Image (cartoon, rainbow, N blue to C red; front, side, top):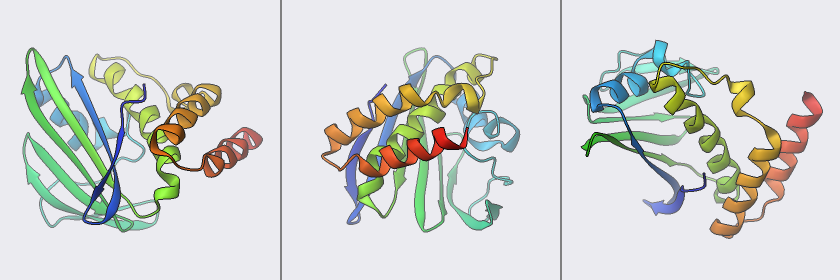
Length: 171
């Protein structure tokens, strides 16, 4: 899938992903807010409640929860970047909007392809299954998604190509 869009928020690049999921807002809220659920599909399981103003540690850095309106909105900062999930009832399920505000626009395609990998793990998780990170990171598929994003966003694909080469070399 390559449905992410590149926007600008407060003068910074931002990726926006929208998914319609066949699960209730409450079920999706648990998946995006509870550490035991996050670790099954998200890049990192934050050890949080979450509560506005709460800080958490991951990968040697500190993040802060900036907004919680359960079960509809969760926002946080981490590593100088901003993240948010917005959930709303939609037909027989839930519409999820994820926004990631970052600094370096040259990494937009690489970052978007990474988020596609993690979102590919969300639906199986919500349905009671599991797609491992290793299974989700099939590098040939990742590279195709990355190239489509680089073209769509008008960014140089070289950083993402170097990244995937390094990942393949490390396997």
